[in-house]
Image 1 (cartoon, rainbow, N blue to C red):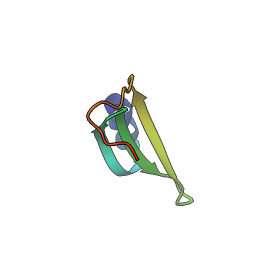
Image 2 (image 1 turned 30 degrees about the horizontal axis):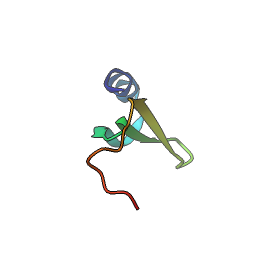
Image 3 (image 1 turned 135 degrees about the horizontal axis):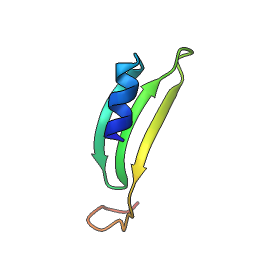
Image 4 (image 1 turned 90 degrees about the vertical axis):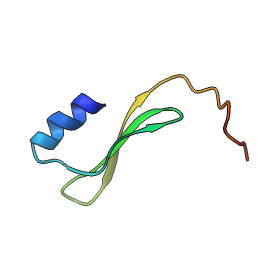
Length: 54
């Protein structure tokens, strides 16, 4: 995710959120020319341990 973020940023892609650690992996959010938000995710196995459940 970090490498893709750096490559796309260098090409002028508008990122709303840089790569950030999440319980399920690393996530980055970008916006396209129409204003749509797109999410890049580098996933990892998620057990849910340590997080409250609804």
